Amino acid sequence: LSRSPRPMQPVWGRLLCIGAKEAQAYRRIDIDKVELVIGRKEGCGERIADNTVSSVHCRITLKRAEHVPETPLAFYGLEDEEDDDMPMPRSPTEVWIEDCSANGTFVNTQKLGKNNRVRLAQNDEVGLIRACGGSERPPYAFIFQDFSNELEPHELEALLSPSATAPPTPRGSVEVAPINLQQPAQMAPQPPVAPLAKLTPGPLNERTPGGKSDDDSLYMSIAALATPNPEGLREIRNTMRRGVLDIGDFITSDGPSALLDVVAEVLAKPKLGWVDLELLDGALGALTELTRSRDGTQSVLETEGALDRLVALR
Image (tube, rainbow, N blue to C red; front, top):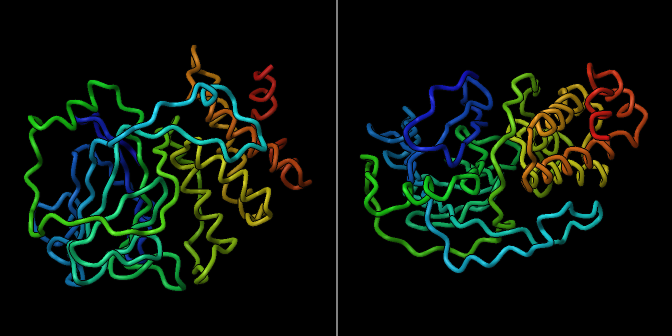
């Protein structure tokens, strides 16, 4: 996908479209306003011309977080490969989704219910009409990506300032209290190092209720590589380690090349920050797991420029 010129407001989030009625799989919706309204009504930030979608179906809002703890200094070094329990730093922002429809808004497998809201976490799936993760995909669904932690302090302040001009979006719901859903960790990872346009996912296969299939793990891995971030790369490594991810399908989807692209993009920078080190650590961890199998090792060695990229690490 070609990207339009940089908007006046920085992009703080993204939705990857994965619904059954999407004409283009993984179409991107960049979010550069403090609020995105999804619905059928004229003026919605993402307008869906379908009568099954409510005029104002749901609302995604970026808010200033409360009680942000200080980041431990240990976080800024490379984490140990086996240490997956180290706490990640909290973002200075929170992202909430509000259900404004009686037709159903789902976060992963949970239905919110009209006038309820819940926090969104990285890679949460938002489904309209039907829940994600079942045997039949929702007609309209999205993978949520949070880039707010990458914003410069002045960009974040300008975005969240009460004096900032709010977008003219439709209203139609009252102030609501959050509901208590079981949620993943609230770390807001970093934006992509570079778009990996050559990634070639196959069709989104049906996923079995009650758990993640190999197809589901592959599909989430492809989404994570499309917008690489430390948390997503660690999850790819962990699914390989647990034997959940089908290595053959991952290779067919150009996964090894995408991981090497992350390494190359990070190493091309003149100066590496802690986010770059986390990206590099995640990509190398996934490559290490990949090369534990014969097919995985062969796929890495056969990737053009692979040895040059890995030698550059010395």
